[in-house]
Image 1 (cartoon, rainbow, N blue to C red):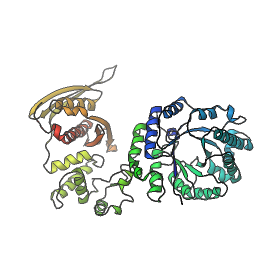
Image 2 (tube, rainbow, N blue to C red; image 1 turned 90 degrees about the horizontal axis):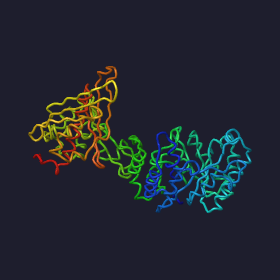
Image 3 (cartoon, one colour; image 1 turned 90 degrees about the vertical axis):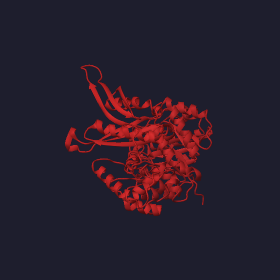
Image 4 (tube, rainbow, N blue to C red; image 1 turned 60 degrees about the vertical axis):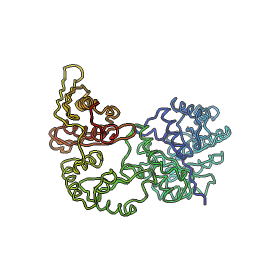
Length: 530
């Protein structure tokens, strides 16, 4: 039995209908190239008849050679009482110059009679003539039966007649769409099995996630006979999104022995997920199965102890199989196993019987009780452990700082930070202006240490987050500050906690600088003045 599944990615079309998801034409090309390298069979680039940006993408795609994937243009059937030869949208599909096209038509009488307000036979004629015309122009035609499951549940005969019309006109694939995302897996399974008895053309599935069942419905459809599946990277899409290919692919390939992508490519799944998030300028979903940062993160001490002995105890697949990694979180739930694992991971030598481990665990629990959180601030954790082992010396010592914020009746506020540091035994006294207190402090600190460690210019603050910990205390509440810093493609996170947001920011900021300097040992460990 052939267990090959044809993957149809619609991140660039259906995915962009999701809130806050937008790509330029060049963004789309970058993602298409990455999807092609990953092993996706079809890449739906957009609707050329709807906007100039999508047509620009197809123009870019024509000048690029794809090794595996077919680029697909999307559109609708011709309009009522109109021939495909005279239909603008159909002509734009042909002008897009793609080897394959996907067109949608109505399967649900509710849409035919109330949305389109056309005769039911006219709808079937539109489907047939559009597919026929595109086939005559040498296109591979993927027919999307919109609202098929809702239509089938209310009038199975009519829903079937719509896809039979597409089949008789030569459609290469018939895709059953759960457009409203309200169908349950048992319904999908039953309907797909029944449809298979009436058509010979290969079937596909297009599921939306409004009941959080898009992945489950896709798996049910494949297990019932669909050989073509549609989805998006990270589940991006309209309303609650589409079937998430980052979950569908490993569920089929790693757990059910279907072939979705080349075996050697599935380990690139996590990097693909992060790449698309970055191009979309959206924060990755850390709790996303398989590819999320938290997918293989262990926190409870008993769990960690078991995972260290045999990873299968708390991991359903090896994280490396999808390009992810195991993480052990250190928190007030931690035990000795967490500290040992994390120390090994950070390259810190802790003897298994060392008396330092209980002290470190105790210190962490007290700090987390005070509001610190080291799960997302591993750089601060590493510094803490090194300091407790007395294997750490700060690269600079704060003598004091002062921040002035001046607000005039008109214009922006003016912020200035003055800082005094001891660096390599020398006093540095510097000032800088910034757009706010943290920005000014960051610039003043850079000035003070740059003469000794010029490499500091290569790192910068990437993200700054503040979390109020004691809401009942209002403006007197304790706050936790997380700072993400980056140099090239390496990033790290540090944490600070205080009732004074500037003190918390300084703690996270100074940890970030110290962590960077420590990891640039060869360039910066010589503390002689330059």
